[in-house]
Image (cartoon, rainbow, N blue to C red; front, side, top):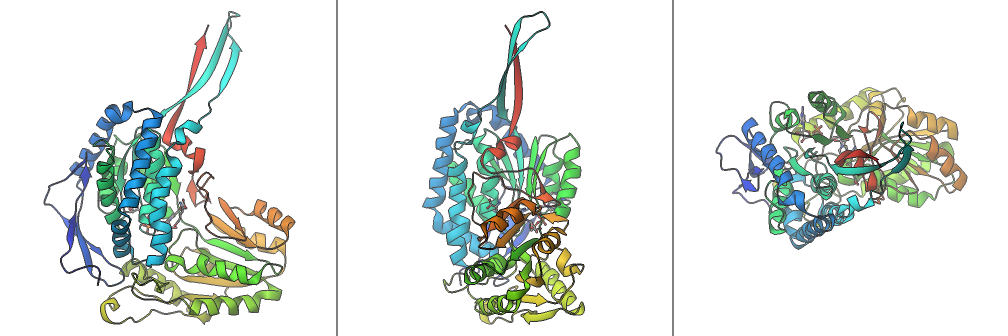
Length: 491
Ligand code: NAD
Ligand code: 6OD
């Protein structure tokens, strides 16, 4: 038992102080057990206004006067603070998400700190432009570019990698001199509040980092995205939610940066190193119980190795071990919520109704003792469906994949690209020319060759088609987190 029977309270962070209101609290549920972990204060429109006002005031305060080096040092202190409180973040993240400790301790929490280190010096990488010109009177003039902070940034986060995905946006925003108001997912509010404590201990001025908790429509998400004091909205979540946020951003013509849904394809050619492909594919499909935006839900395998590949993946999937997320031998966690369990089991039912062959899984998992109330579901592999079926077109976001055979490179590329999404793809081959040729034709923001989820934070990250707008990562984040300006000087 790690939750305890006496749930704590999570409050909003408005201008450095935690709010004291006693309004509505909602339950933060541990998805592994169904137990209430904490009661979370739902921000009202007034709370959101307080947060945005505090963030705007902080732009003009000591934060706005720091040099780039001072800000970089501040970000590194935040990273230090996350590392010092590693175990607190780890426990909070596991209780909120139910993800296995091996994943959270190797990926989620270390990336929380790494994001601040990676982006600490981001603004220094702006090299600028310089153009000389002749003015109409024959005199000389020149132009140079400047970047300034965009202002108050709203950061709207999902629940699947809460600390990782929040800090991935908060870090570049702060590095560029902005202030932020974060709206964590209603499912996973804990680490955003813990980060506020780290910010305070790192000497970050009040109002630079604010947290408003609540839901989307009619709650903190909508209040924040509609607030006229917000200068830009960066969002990670479902494509449909992105559409609603884009409509809110239209009022006041505020820019958005969106990382949205996916229906990612993996292409496995017969000349691949089969064991390596299988070892990584099992991660690409089942990590975080499939609740990763980059997860592979459509696999296309070249016909000569199709049977062997399906058997090999099924054998590995059978080794997925559900259990106590704090146990190091657990590899499969629960789905985030009862609602999400219903959605994913709905797709399991649709797959069977559409005539899929269920290679493994297809149902829920009946756990015992304290885990009986959790949202557990079987790792599932299907074959036999057409590319037109719902299973092949819609994002499911569960531990499941459909595997189809293919007969040639062009066919594989066309079928992988036949999606309204364009987030990520992976391909497995030992033919170097083929790797480059295919990667260039896949319509996704990132393609992994002979790997999956291998990240260099200097690279552009984002989605094509319905999977996003804009790119973050490395210098690409400068586009959204700063305003680029031109100064024209007549001599
Ligand atoms: P979601 O869209 O349901 O919610 C994300 C956030 O938006 C939550 O904080 C929610 O409260 C808020 N929200 C919902 N409606 C809103 C509204 N009308 N106005 C303002 N805020 C609103 O997404 P989710 O279920 O939390 O996360 C899963 C989804 O996120 C999947 O589709 C997944 O592919 C996607 N995702 C994408 C990436 C990426 O990098 N492209 C990364 C992680 C997750
Ligand atoms: O690694 C990242 O920076 C990133 N944004 C990962 C997204 C994962 C989606 O679930």
